[in-house]
Each structure stands twice: as structure tokens, then as C-alpha cells.
Length: 268
Image (cartoon, rainbow, N blue to C red; front, side):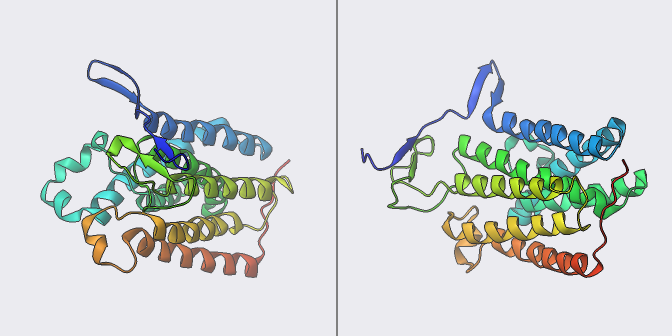
């Protein structure tokens, strides 16, 4: 075997008892909520907000993430199949989640939360944006453990041979590329929040999140294998087309945020 590549043969299951299996993806997905909750609890404490409010926000975002990610996969990538077999949409354990759908679901869920809790929408989504970037890191590492959503062949020395899928040629580990980018974005957003102890231009954090995540996603997609057959005839794949409107929204949001210069006031 070529010593300049990395053979990847990780079992996606941590353990199995009969028909019940615990998978790395599920553990990492759950970890994204756990660590997100811990970070937001510090932010809420900094702003003298209750744990009850955070608990309510967590429920809204969790539901929005899962429902949005599932519907995004079904409607963006395989609409013909799922519209013909709508019951299959509910079978989330069969796999199939889309990050663009999750983004839409999160935005809608935060809007609903803000309306119900009588909190400013931009204030809420700015804070959630910080942990969304961290969640992206965990989810892409879950994709790595599943040996899925990887790149095209490469001659680079860090190419991964995904043996679980019967691959024999090294491929770009695009899951790691994305995960590292998202981790850096998370660190930047967290630093921007804490550098003035939470007082920042309102709307800046969410706009930077949209711009940085989806610009990165757009360019990394050039290295990925097609996820569905119809992408082979497209100059830009579905992930890239879906990233464009989010990027534009981010720039528009950033423009108006900097223009208004409305700063978040923290009650001490």
C-alpha cells in the first residue's frame, strides 16, 4: 500500500446490542447540542438571563435543526423519491440530512422562539450563530466516521482511502477540511462576542457566520464527489447553488448591521 496515503477503515458503529447500535455520527451530533448548550449557558449568564429561557431556545433550535435538515435532504437532493414515498421522510434513522435545510430550519425556529419569548430576533440569532459553527465541526467529523461526503481522488500525501466503501484510491478528506474551517469560524465568533463581554454591533455575528460558512462550503464543494446522480450534469453542484443565497443574505445583513451600528446592550 502507498505509504503516502491514510487508510481509513473506522467502523461507524461504536457498539451494537442486537438490533440497537450506537454510532459515532449520532454521538457527535448529540455532542454538538451538549457543547452548544454549555457555551450558550455562559453567554446567558453573562447577560443575566435565565436557564429556563435557554432551555426553551434549545428545544426550538433542536426541532428546527432536525426537521429542517431532514426536509432539506428530501426536497433538495431526492425530491422525486420522497414526494412519491412521503412516509420515508419520517424515517430519519435511514440517514439523509442537509446542512442547508438545517440552516433554514434554525432561522425559522429562532423566529418562532423570538416571537413567543418576546426577544429580539437578531439578538437571539447572533448568539445561536456562535454554536452553529461549532455544530458544523461535530457533524462533519461524524461524516468522517461514517466514511461519507468525501472528495475526489488526490495525489496529496494526506489523501484518505475509505476502505469501508470499497475505495482503493486516495480521496480528499473534505469532511476534515470543512470541520477545521468551521472550528476556526467558531473561535472567531466566540472571540468577537467576548472581546467586549457581549457588547457588539447587532447582526454582525450572524452575518459573518453566513458569509464565512457558505463561502467555505462553496469552494470546498469543488473537491467533493457528487452526492446524487443529477449533479454530474451541473457546472455547480446542489450544495454550491444552495450556498449562494445564504452568502448573499450574509452580505446584505452585514451591510445593514454596519450601517445601523446598533450595539447590543448588556444588563449587568
